[in-house]
Length: 403
DNA sequence: TCTAATGATTAGGA
DNA sequence: TCCTAATCATTAGA
Image (cartoon, rainbow, N blue to C red; front, side, top):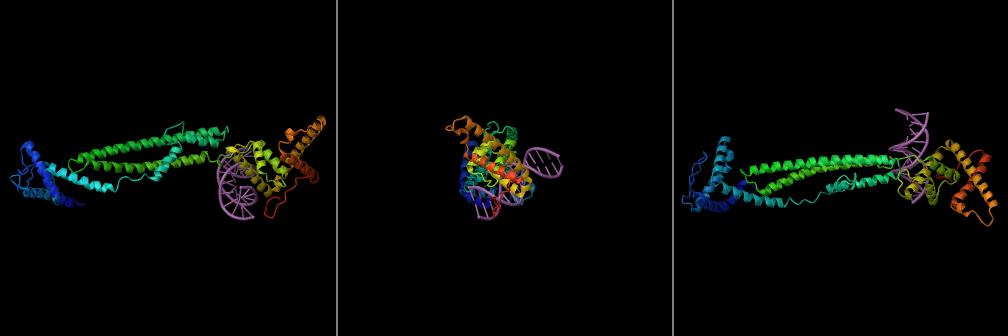
């Protein structure tokens, strides 16, 4: 709404308001609004209603003043300054000013009604939630409880991981500190800027109509602007945490070679089952237990079983690709398995001689039926080796799988 | 520093 | 769902 329209609309209310103002002025200083004089170096138009009771005259008077205000921009700077000063010193100014404030207030309310109460930004909510979950935002619990839990899970109880764990926590604490420092800076800057703008507006409210609600709205705008800056900070922090996580907690990056013992157990099984190197789920679990493979992820048995699966998958494909290279290894394990089997047979024979035939050594032998069968197979393969001078290569199916 | 070894991941197939 | 095959990323040794 343009100022001139505002003025046209408010002329009537001005007149009545000014009547009130005049009455107040009269009661205070005994001076009538109609008693115009030359003030502040500016000549005001001659009075139209001399007795102060003529309503039309007052309207004309107000009209003249408003005309001066509206044409002030058409004049030179000096003239305008002089006229402005004159208007500021005019006795009618407070009345006119309060009415303009009132109108502006009403106009501002209608505009604001359609603007305020923005719904919370979902992106900002996501960032806040993530920072909370990562232990960056919110109360500090020993370097971020969520992060500690994540790091501990990744560590899987391995002693060497504790170094990386503490390193991760240290880095996270660093990020947390930077985040809070920056956040404080932003908040401080926001408060300072808001105070500055508020003071400025209050100062200006002496010379132009500025309502408290308008100041409030301006504060809201400033806060929104600073909030968008804060969002950028939160986004950068989230990215930093993600990079840190991938660097320290990504299982792939934390690859550790299995222990020599574990590799031996897996190799023994592989070469003793070369004709069908596909361990069942139970066999995988048993192997995982035997190997105590808790190096990489180590959370629950399923992960270690999947490690066994990975190992066999890799072994099969690498063996198939280069049988010649693995021949020596195969012979080695075949001999080893045969020796173990021979020892087991000797022990069993000794046992059967020492004990009565009705008391079988069930405790050990029945523990793992599949592994007993493995030993039997090993004996057979040993015999084969003795005749062939090497370990039998597996046959491959048409689809490439080992038969 | 280079390279082979090796555990993990991924895409595609059955 | 499990497998193969290719590839990635890290480790360890020369």
